[in-house]
Image (cartoon, rainbow, N blue to C red; front, side, top):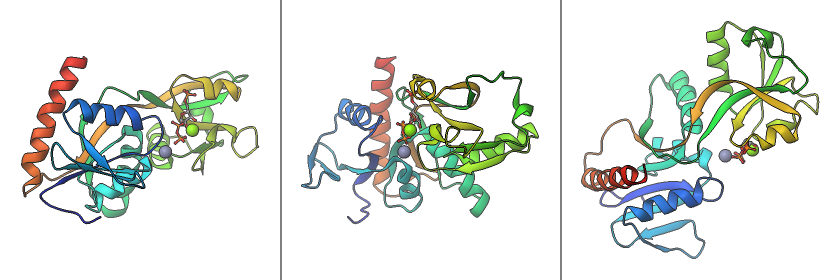
Amino acid sequence: VQGGRDRLRIAIQKSGRLADPARALLTSCGLSWRESRDRLFCYGESLPIDLLLVRDDDIPGLIRDGVCDLGVVGRNVLAEQDIALRRDQGASAFREWRSLGFGGCRLSIAIPETWEWSGAAQLAGLRIATSYPAILGDWLREQGVDAGVVELSGSVEIAPKLGQADAICDLVSSGATLAANQLKPTVTLLESEAVLAGPVKPFEDSRAALAELLLRRLDGVLRMRH
Ligand code: PRP
Ligand code: ZN
Ligand code: MG
């Protein structure tokens, strides 16, 4: 799939919590598509706005590389990759354009249920498992706490049971995952929800007018949902 400048390409999650609500929201904005056979690409019919269905963690990089123009992704994923990018390249490549009001969750520190929580200082010298090492690292530094960060790409909640870590830093929505693993949430590092992400700089070709049209419709839909 080639990056065109007369069509807008939006990356959304292929499957997972944000997949259906993201599509429903864009449908409410008057978009409709014809799906490719492999269902990874949806060709915009009502407007020249296409969808690319991908893993959520890939969305910020797709925007940075210009493969996609916009994306619907959790603020948690965007923030994590922005911190890492600013550290490595010294500048942001994407930013939050709108918050979308669904997929709410929090990125929190969770500890074994049997522990008493007395504050961040308690984490000193412990190992904390997470898929968000950049956000956690920044927070630990702000708190002046020296703790080990164990980076895992998934199933973070079983790390304490496996003896891989003492505590975790992960997303909490209903709390069911933590409860099932005898963990409890303590302090929150980030309040997250689905956001529309886009480049830092505005578009300079015909995508600018398309993006503006989409944002206008989106703002209307979000106002009505409120
Ligand atoms: C998140 C998180 C927990 C779960 C918490 O994973 O990593 O596993 O949700 O939700 P709960 O509090 O409602 O139980 P998610 O399934 O969203 O995505 P992932 O596959 O990227 O971990
Ligand atoms: Zn993910
Ligand atoms: Mg999970």
